[in-house]
Length: 449
Ligand SMILES: Cc1ncc(C[n+]2csc(CCOP(=O)(O)OP(=O)(O)O)c2C)c(N)n1
Ligand SMILES: [Mg+2]
Image (cartoon, rainbow, N blue to C red; front, side, top):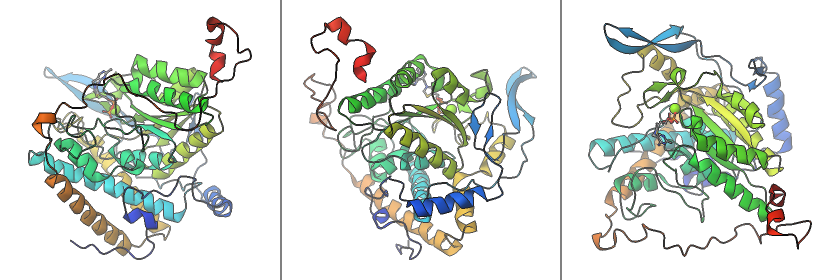
């Protein structure tokens, strides 16, 4: 396998070296370059941003021209397509903020995400993975470009499919691989398998919580804690189309909305929750409509377009820094594999799979980079090879990692209640109008401000 690095245009110097590969999120674009891109954006001949029937901005360049209904045929329950699945793929919307170098870096992260999961699938088939394996095929643009809009001090609450987001935040592919293999060197040191790992000390990642929606109130609490320490941070929480229906999603995000906490809720509308299509999950069409009820800005984006994902997250993150509160982004795309490796997703009608296959986020990004003259086909191929070689190295490390020693296997599994959480951003500073007022008075929501 070639280890040759592409020469130009290369990803940022950091990019070759995980985990410090991300260009710090300040969005890199100088005001001059940003306005240049914005000008191109406005004059690019693409339709302006539309609005859905409830006034929610819809940045997509196409509406999904079909939906799924259910029917019984000869005693069998099945899904049928209503509408047309043959529409051509639209172009990507140019980003208002991303520079050429950042766009290339995002593409490289997307490649890492995809190749890491291809490696994981092989490890699974070799029976080296303990338990199940969750894949994000088709969702890489959403994970990568949203996480890329965060800065180091920001937090993230990923779900099982956001393994790519965790790479952007600083994990290495070997961490994810070792975690799935239960190795002693994995983030959970072999105490937990699968995608349940996080790092509240350095990387600011909340381990995915199985109970769908519960992570949202955790990051709302993190944002509140940071505010009490004098800092407005952004906390990106992901939730699926299935998970967003839960009570904890509502409770957590409502709290963030009321308290104007910088929680950015990325609703990953990937058309399925397990084997249930969205048509059987909720009665509205656009989940971004929920933002009206929460009282926060909402936006609909094409989840296979990394530029739309980045721009929407970037704007929500900037809002968070300004102390203006929470935002909701609905990304529409399709989960291209089953719920987990045990699920072949045979319930998905083939034309639907084909429709979304043509909208592969990596293919779309490749076309975009080539059309802009930012990468040549030869440079793309070289980068793909370079990432393959990198992934081989990561997999070799992961495969050679030891299993935990049985004598200490349960060490650190249970909390001893002696956990101290040190303030991260500064001393806690709660201002009250009357220091002497009684407990009941000081517990009004006003003291959060
Ligand atoms: C409260 C709760 N209910 C049910 C489950 C079981 N469960 C785990 S994943 C999943 C489907 C989630 O679908 P969605 O939120 O759309 O995410 P996706 O898998 O499509 O990424 C379900 C029902 C759970 N973990 N938590
Ligand atoms: Mg789903």
